Length: 465
Image (cartoon, rainbow, N blue to C red; front, side, top):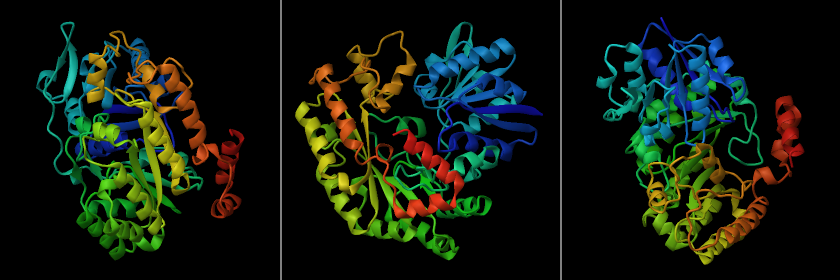
């Protein structure tokens, strides 16, 4: 019997689907494995040790990587024979950063790779998709081909998680309504290669679960966890194909799932959405669509998304969504290379003029994530130092609380002027964002009165305003 503990060091409102997919695949393929999942942002090492593992598996973004290095050191000090594995977007993008306290880095998709590591039948040199230490060097093996049929991976093993925590009513859709629900994935990869995104490098070309798999998972969620109100489908582009969407909706009708009244949030792109798609989304029970508008200057948008979408298409989709009474949540980024103050003002005005049409507006600073074209741009410009502090990558995704902006990519607008501009933007979007307002809908008020968990969470939210 081999014991593996998978670790989620930043538990939030969404369950760590990547870890539970790994767990479900290992359960399917191995009889002699004990799997534990530790979810903690405090006392992480102690909680891992309590599970008495032979192998510890971390997943890490770039902003978390310093923390993972520290936990690996602590684990090795406790037991030098403990095998530490790290996967996720950071090590996939930069396998040469594998810490000396980590034994193996998993590059790309992890299910089959971790299975081979645990089976122990092959030397490290013969396992595709890993990096490891040998003779004071980091050896980087060939990448493993992506799994072609995603349906060969069983439904994620949510039973290994503390689902009570994730099912508590929350801002699952980033709106003022609080829902009891969870998340799911119906695909991996993407059709596009935007300059700022790691997804295509991490997950490859778009691969899909079948409609049968998807609806079966929806039914499974509702059977195991009662009174589910909402599901957030976290694919980057769920609504991209009319025929696939129609097949999913047809199965939802045939199985009786639509009668459960579950609400959905999905993500897509404005160039993929039309009347036919919106009709199907309405039938499915979609209440909100997240769209990465990014910029409302065609010059900047063409650069970031390689001429695949226009500002006019972004404007048109807001009108379509209103027609079907489906909310739109928008993501915007500022500080891209060659973005002028006029470009930024165009995006600002788009947000201001459409605040009443948006359920929320998420604003971030353009950040050069590893293994993207923006990363290459930052390297060539000398913006990325040799001795880098990985935790600084948190800055691009939060309201400005650190005025250093270590990875500022824009050479058209001085940093001081940019910071003042962003302070204004953050104040303006707080008018629409659920984290910046304390009004409550009648629908949510009724739920709060009936549900003490919901009432406590909403009270805590209000007290932070």
